[in-house]
Amino acid sequence: MSGPALLSVIRDDGVATLTLNRPERHNAVDDSLIAALDEALTTLEAQPAVRAVVLRGAGPSFSAGADLDWMRRSAGYSDAENLADAEALAGMLRRLDQIPKPTIAEIQGPAIGGGVGLVAACDIAVAADGATFALSEVKLGLTPATISPYVVRAIGARAARRYVLTAERLSALEAHRLGLVHEVVPGHMLTAAVARVLDRLAAGGPEAQAAAKSLIADVTGRPIDDALGRDTARRIADRRASAEGREGIAAFLDKRPPAWRRAPDD
Picture 1 (cartoon, rainbow, N blue to C red):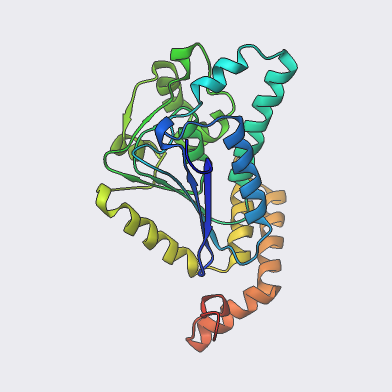
Picture 2: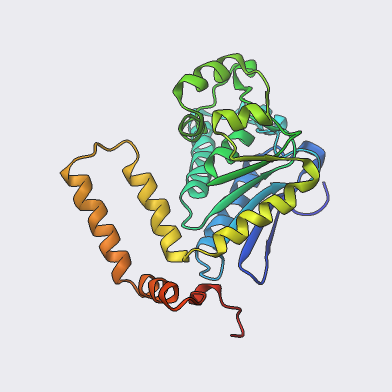
């Protein structure tokens, strides 16, 4: 393999792109790539200038899931080593899921096993029409344990029962029907489709987007009762009183772009 397993680029407009750079292994993940992803996400989270994160794969595949050599090594691990290895993967997926910035999975080709988990942990998923998806772990005598919270959340328990058990391959259109991906476009239009999503994201206040991600996570599955009403009322009251909220409302009334949409030199 030539070059680093993960490429990280931050554009002047605040869009960060993380590229899985193991095309000769179909961007399969191992312990080193998991650590690199976790470190990169931690770094991006601490940078206010970063507005959005795009996760993509180099070459024809998005990600083939777990690297076979890594799995072969793990077969010889002690129970404690195996657990630590699995916890590192779970921690990276949680960081991807919870980073307080919008994340987009740009899926140009196959996403298998853990690759599906990466897609499901992102906020938005855009796929080329030739992309395919499979939860193939049972074919290896394994289960999609660490990715399951994100996959089940994306496609629902009923669909998960079928596709986790059968390990059958899904087309991009079927993945869209199930809710795993939000948009399917011809392959040559994938970059442009992601760019359109990024442009829409740029219209939102970055603090509001972070708060909105937290809101969605916190209200999901909760009973709609007085406690939830008080919680959500407190959240919107705080946003209205925030500097960003006041700027957004003022900009709307003044018919001008809000401060976060201005060019750096304005």
